[in-house]
Length: 415
Image (cartoon, rainbow, N blue to C red; front, top):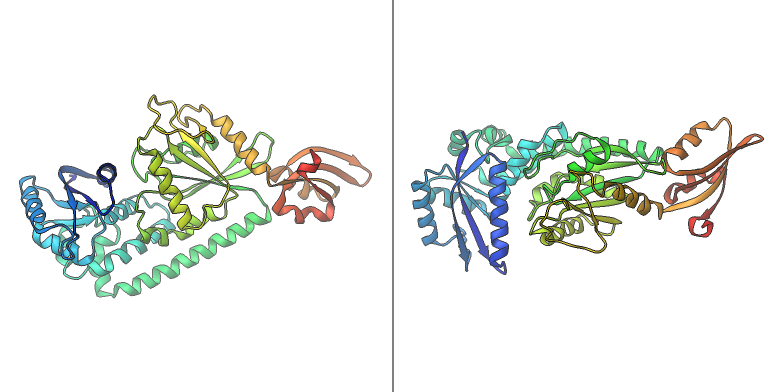
């Protein structure tokens, strides 16, 4: 049975009414994604934040009455609450209280499938729960399995008895081992250098559909926020014959909790090692311009905003188009329109970092020739004496690996 949720929208600081409404609508979608049912809602323009309850005394009394009238199981506030504010609101409302971050963490706990993803989610949740456990043991024991208690929430008392900080330390060590393992895999990839293209974007913009259309990756797709959490990497063959790796990453969202950015650092590192970023935007969403800013701010926070990027305007088959950009590429991942142009643009962007080379390969070095075909473009391969003379384009950053087999000249000069 779905939780009956009372949702509280909040406007404060320099937030406009339209910004508050968009954030509120997104929170409703988050609650639905987490398995809740919105029983009722209210909005509040907070002029001064109450350090004890965040909301004013009169509003708290009003919400308490509405919660009882609507038989709500829990209250969700569209803001980040301090542990003190959280506890005080629960006492005065007589209901379980969650803030925006708690709902997002709960959805991540639902979506995590791999061992790494589960470790990262548990770390993020425990770091969030640690200062909130005091006095909430009874609440957790009563609410197990509901929104906000998935993952470590169900066993929070056990963690408290064993010292929650010890568990956090253990999780960090485990995640470091995962990062070390990822680094080994990256080094292997560097040994057989194939360009990496990371697909990023706001949650539910259609990143996984783009991935599926390009590579037949069969990534899980659903019209809900954070439908996919764990990253997926697949090979894509470009028209020239060279291969690239496509990495589908977790979706971004407004005020992405810092606990998640930190805990999922190993996942986000896939973007850091990418040669090119494909940013997918839902062009039919009225909030598209703001979503672009959110993605840009998250990439800037991770110091990845200087990487080459292609902006893809997805869902262009829909009649409503609320966002345009002369430099962007309109596509429909669902129908396939424009996807061929996207592949060509990916190849064109990657090509700018290539050098034209003529290599003289001994016949015994067929392994090198195979590598050239995988990561570059071969114009010709002629047999002459003891060598195969290969006229090709290769990634600039890997050129040194092949210099012993011939001379290089820049692509611009060659053309």
